[in-house]
Image (tube, rainbow, N blue to C red; front, top):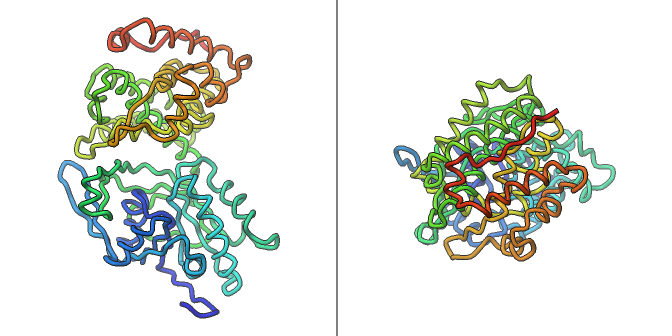
Amino acid sequence: MHGEDPEIFPQKLVLFGAGKIGRSFIGQLFSRGGFEVVFIDVNESIIDELNKKHGYNIIIKGEVEETLKIKDVRGVFAGNFEEVTREVATSGILATAVGQEGLNTAIPLIAGGLIKRFESNPGIPLDIIIAENIRNGSGYFHEELKKHLPEWFPVKEYIGTVETSIGKMVPIMLKKDMEKDPLQVFAEPYNTLILDRFGFKNKIPDINGLSPKDNIKAWVDRKLFIHNLGHAAAAYLGYLFNREFVYIYEALSVPEIFRLVRETMLQSADLLLRRYPEDFTENMLTEHIDDLLNRFRNRALGDTIYRVGCDLFRKLGPDDRLAGSIRMATDQGQHYEKILFILICACKFRAAGEDGKLFHRDAEFVNLFNGDHKKILSGVCGFDLSEDKEVFELAGRIALSLNQYEFKELLRSGAEQSQPNPD
């Protein structure tokens, strides 16, 4: 393994990211599927713990609490370039679960390993499972890898870039739980990894929980514009309804919030159905929404309004859950008033974490915009004041209602503003 001509180990997964999704979902699926899992991470203390214990516990928070003991894992510190690239060069399959910012560190390391691998094994391509919540992850990876690979490197032929739809919910760990065991992680029972059937260069691993799909774009959009949209809606409405609420299940215990979240998800589902008529049916999406709402109300999971709602620059971005769904509606000439109502509520989101502080970029967001929905719509969401005139006009009516009426009464009277019939 440490020689000049490295041997490839087909049953080894090299996983960039030893965080919550990495440990509770991707690493867990592959470890239980018979793979050795090698975590690469910038957190040296987590890597040290993994190498000390070679395993960790996942606490499944469902109707009955269950502990999964994950074994046969180890870690490599991301700062050790030679060791990391050697692991990549000898891996049977690769995955990332680091978040988009973390990819800036991971991709140069992956590229270094790919060069080393190609020199010794040019006939054995490498598949990379992109376990990130980004759209067009395949194209993004190809373009970013090219920046760190020689011009002659056969990127498209040698690298399989496998997009995914990550639906597993993993809450923030409380300080007391992390102090008890820094490797343990809480997660919901849901355990299905939707991925792109056509992204693989090699045979798809035979592992329980992998669910290959023909049109991954449809499933990525389903995650973003139904799951992420509905989850965020519950957080933003719950925060405005009662600043004392901590958990998502508290927000969804309010009938008016539950109703509006479900109706907003259905409004977005209608847009998806028009975009992907061959992939979804109305019944499929409605059943998915009702299943999600049951999962969102999982009291044992303890998912917080802060976690689900924070990071406003990203979550209100032009192609993300709310603005992206509104843009899809305007393109189709369809209704979006419920979705826009949630977006305007998000402009007022100020939930703090366990430490009593705002998410670091949300503090910057508040200082920069101070709840000014017009500036947020143009400066963050990417709407144009002239081209998207109707969006701004409807947003103005919604903002006026939020300022004029007590929020609880507004919800009880039917919060979403009327929208003219689309052309």
